[in-house]
Amino acid sequence: MKKLNVGMIGYKFMGKTHSNAWRQVDKFFPLSAQPVLHTICGREKKGLTAAAKTLGWSGVSTDWREVVANPDIDVVDINTPNDTHAEISIAAAKAGKHVLCEKPLAMTVKEASAMVDAVKRAGVVHMICHNYRRIPAIAQARKMIAAGDLGKIYHYRARYLQDWIIDPEFPLVWRLQSKIAGSGAHGDINAHIIDLGRYLVGEFSEVCGHLETFIKRRPLPGSKKKGRVTVDDAVITLGKFKTGALACLEASRFAAGRKNHIQLEVNGSEGSLVFDFEDMNRLKYFARGDASDRQGYRDIIVTEGVHPFISAWWPPGHIIGYEHTFVHTVYDFIEAIVKGKSVQPTFVDGLENQKVLEAVARSSKLRRWVKV
Ligand SMILES: NC(=O)c1ccc[n+]([C@@H]2O[C@H](COP(=O)([O-])OP(=O)(O)OC[C@H]3O[C@@H](n4cnc5c(N)ncnc54)[C@H](O)[C@@H]3O)[C@@H](O)[C@H]2O)c1
Image 1 (spheres, protein in one colour):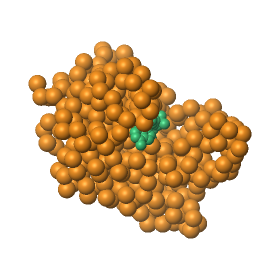
Image 2 (cartoon, helix red, strand yellow):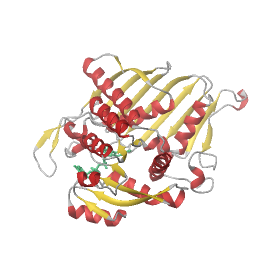
Image 3 (cartoon, rainbow, N blue to C red):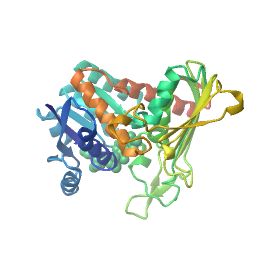
Image 4 (tube, rainbow, N blue to C red):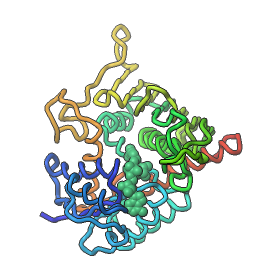
């Protein structure tokens, strides 16, 4: 079987989820090429060597440029902070590598456009890792909406809530510095529910948003001195889709008790769908067409062989989790590379997402609705 040598840049949180996916995918999915965990890259040798051993990579490199220049590498998988995505992706594309990049795609629309140009010019397969699209319940929701089961869509309501920085003494890590992260809850978690809105409903046409920073100064990592927080802690967004549907989004890192709480509700003329990530194998479906004496939300446990991705896993009712979404992502990515096809979400989706992010931030500054 054809081999695909993978070079992975960044080895912490996302590095771990992606390594697991590259390691697991051939055990469950019928692949057309075998991924090889060729080289893992980070900045510091000791931690990197330990990570390579734990995560199953054969080679290490402390310089991403070396990975990108290596003629043996076929795929570059980018799991580094946001300020590095553009430079690494563009260099990888120029070197003819297929690129999988974490979200948000870039720091700005300008950077994202340059990334799209580079991958298109190079003719490589490009994908942004909005892994939540590949939760079977979400892929099922998309199928049902596309088939018209919900009729005309009126509302997309979504919230993505966390609480990991609610303590004012939590340090000023890279995610709280705009020069590295670009934005806070906005690019980190609002980007995901914007992507799911685009996936399920369509393109945004206009937005009105507000970004808020509740704690303005925080201790510098490993120090008592404080530095300025330069990103948002929370963001609220109202939006309109080109289809005429309305969007209402909330993303916060200050929702005490919420750890990785993603809730979506889509209401259409013929029914509704409700999804809750903390119960991710379930999709709730209300059909207006049901006989009125038995109307109510149905619980679909999305673990039947007919449901997206599920036949590769366990028998019905034997649930799957967070890590599976990354396995599904790399499976589709590998198949797209072998077949020479495009695979959603592409860098173009990343660019469209970035346009929405930028429009919301502009709206917050201008205190008015803004066209995307
Ligand atoms: N898809 C998702 O749901 C999801 C979840 C979390 C993070 N992310 C995204 O993944 C990316 C990484 O986030 P994370 O949580 O894994 O961060 P992290 O801080 O846990 O890990 C970042 C890694 O990048 C490495 N790194 C930084 N600069 C580098 C450089 N110049 N060269 C090589 N390695 C470098 C660090 O050594 C570290 O291994 C971010 O873009 C983030 O937005 C996506």
